[in-house]
Structure formats: C-alpha cells, structure tokens
Image (cartoon, rainbow, N blue to C red; front, side, top):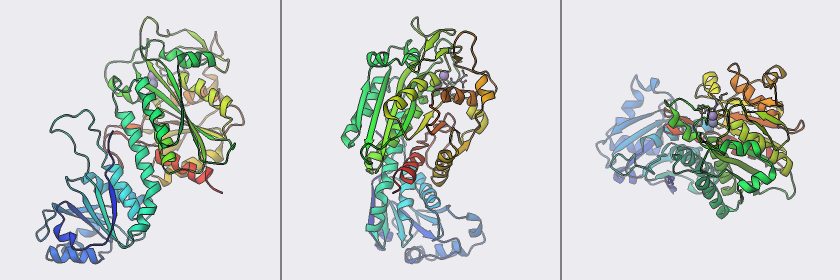
Length: 492
Ligand code: BES
Ligand code: MN
Ligand code: ZN
C-alpha cells in the first residue's frame, strides 16, 4: 500500500534552516512581509529573500505559488522553497499551497517553517495528499519515490497536531481509495477487493461479505447478471460504522465496484479499454470514506455498500436482449451489456433501503462516458431528488475543492427507458446518456428517501495531475463525503 508521508509538528527551531539537508520552505505574504524564519533565510542567503520580494516579478507570482532557490548558498538544504501565502487564508487555499510543496517531494524530509501561520495543519495535509505515488508495481530505478516526510516547525505544535488528527484520516481514506482504483484488475479481483475491505474490521468497522449464493437468495439477479461471464465471483460488501446514536437511521453510501468492464458481449473497442480497471472507483470512494470516518471516530451512523463484479464476455455471459428481474421485482430488458453499472446499483440501492431504512443515500459510480463529454474531468455529475440534501452536498464538495455540478432529472428523460417487452430497458439512447442512467437508478429509490447520485466517470481517475493528486486515481469524493457527514450527521 502507498504509505503516507509521516508528518511531525515541532517547535520552531531556526538553526535547522542552516543545517537541514532536505528542502526547507518558508512563507512570505503577498505584500512581501516575512517572519523570523524568512529573516533567517534572508540572512543565510545574503539577502536573496528580500531581493525576491522587492523584485518586479514578485507581484506576478500570486498567492499559493512557490519560488524555489536550488542549492542555496549559505544553507545545507537542497532547496529553499519560498511559499507566497497570506496570513488570512481559507483552509482550502492553505491545503492547495501545501500541495504545491508536496508535489516537489525530495529525498529527505521537507522542513516547513510555518511560524505562527494558522493553517499549518491544512498545509501539511495538502503536502501529504499531493505526495502520493503508486509504486506497487515498479521494481527498478524508475520509481517515483514517495516523500520521506514533512516536519512542520511552528510556535504551537500541539495545537496544529490536534487539528491534524481528523485531517490525516482524510488522507488515509483518500490513499486507500487511490490504491484500490489504481490497482490492475488481475490483482484487484472481486475476492481481493473484498479481502482488503474485510481488513477494516481492525479499525472498528463491522464488515460483511455476501457471496453469490446469499445474493441469489436475496434476489439480486440484475447485479449477478453482470458477473455471469466472469470467473471471479460477484460479491457485495457491507461496512457499518456505528458512531452515532444507537438505532438512529444511517446515511447509506453505495458504490459501483466493477473491477473490470470489458463491456461484456456488447464488447468495448480495444483503444483505452485498459482504463476500465478504474470502473470500481465508486466502490473505492465508499471504502475510503468509511476508512476516514472510522479513523476519526465520526459521531454518526454510516453504512457503506459496494457491489463487486467483473463484466466479461463468455458463453455464460448475459446477452443483449435478455430480460432479468431485479430484487425490487421490476424487470429489465438488457439492450446493452456495457450499461452494467446501473444493473449493479439498482439491486444494491434496493437492498440498502429494505435493510437499513437510511436517512439518506449517496451513490457513486463511474457510470457513463457521457458525463465526461458534458463536464470533462473538472466536475462530477450530481443528480438528486431532494434540493436541500443536494445543496448540502454541493456545499461540502465546494469547501473541500472537489468539483461537483448538478444535472437535471425529469419524466421526459425517464420515458426514454420504456421497453416493449419488460418494465424498462437498461439504456435510453445517446441523448442525455448520463441523465437516463440516473433516471434508471431513480426507479429504484423510494419516494421519501433523499438520494444523491454522483457520476464520477470523469473525476475518479485522470490523465493529468490535479491540485491534490498526481495523474491516475484522485480519491475524489472522500473529503466531500467526510465533510457531508460532519456537517449534516454529526451536528448536534
Ligand atoms: N464504465 C463505463 C463508463 C465509463 C466510461 C467510465 C469512461 C469511465 C470512463 C460504463 O459501464 C459504460 O460502459 N457506459 C456506457 C453506457 C452506454 C452503453 C449506454 C457508456 O458510457 O458508453
Ligand atoms: Mn460498461
Ligand atoms: Zn462500467
């Protein structure tokens, strides 16, 4: 597993600025003011910091950016990173600034001279999130080394350390999500996925793994129909965190966990098919969020449910045109076996409501290519039957810097799912493909249950670096859902 860079909060020690051999970072404000650490760096470098802030180009650097002096004369450090950041800064801006430092890595611990900056814990979290590297399958010199650690020097280390506790749970959760999402499908089989979730018993989650016989007994025929062509057995994993009032209805998080999506008999084209190792991204975010909640001992009841299947073609695979009866009892004509995510989710959503009577449901799925056409890689598509619930999520996502954009639902879209021979078909045509997919899911949501569907196909794994992650799996959603829980379910 990818290890988090260890973070230490230490009492200010200006002498290490001369002796530290890794990177050393100082903070200067956009108006050119710097603290005692800045003054020490300025003295050691014979005025380089002052020359920077007095230069014409300083104004163009902008808050949140860094200027690096490599192998600065007068210091033993491999680099002096000068971070431009105001004292009055939002948590998110501080986290992003920290991520700029995390990106630079370095073979030795990074020393951040945070002085009396109030957002030191957020700076540390940003550095930790951005320093992620998935090196599991690299054996040689090509390994993009993980950052060895971050030492944050400041006036009140105990305060920052206390603040960092619940924040580090977010990083742990996001790293878990990213590892799962980056893992290839020959490693992360349905069984391996279930085993990794089962290990979360150690941090206090109740974990159940339901096998194919149990799923058949429950009537989850649409979910099972997706895995028919695979040698990997389909599984549902239920993770319960009971940190709230006993008996209080939980929030349910439901994730699509297609460990590989070939499209099935409706086979996908070869180009880019390798990306479908990330088609379990929704389940990955559910897992990472449950991990974060357990690690920070959230005072809320939350249940995570993931459907783990592999969509493969074979003589036993579901055919286009097959009709399957869902757990709810509605029948589905499977026009396209590549629209499999909704078949997994519909049974899982129904099961979640029947068993847990949740106070709200959020489902996450890499559901449609169409959402990437619409929103690119910047925003997840948000669909909901409840404005108040939806707005709470959008607010949580915005404050964590995770892009989310609401999309419409409506009867005219739902009508596109009519089938000649069954209660519905599993695709609604090219037009509004993400919306008809969401309409399909809504058919399995009871009227009075607040529900949000997040189509994360564009944000779960990306081909360019983002603010908080190198290219590959992002862990999008762990921070937003963690905040939704603290804002809504942990409020007195
Ligand atoms: N897993 C895919 C969606 C996807 C595409 C995720 C690209 C990530 C990146 C999903 O199962 C799928 O194949 N959807 C089809 C639906 C269509 C057949 C109605 C799609 O988007 O083409
Ligand atoms: Mn598919
Ligand atoms: Zn899929």
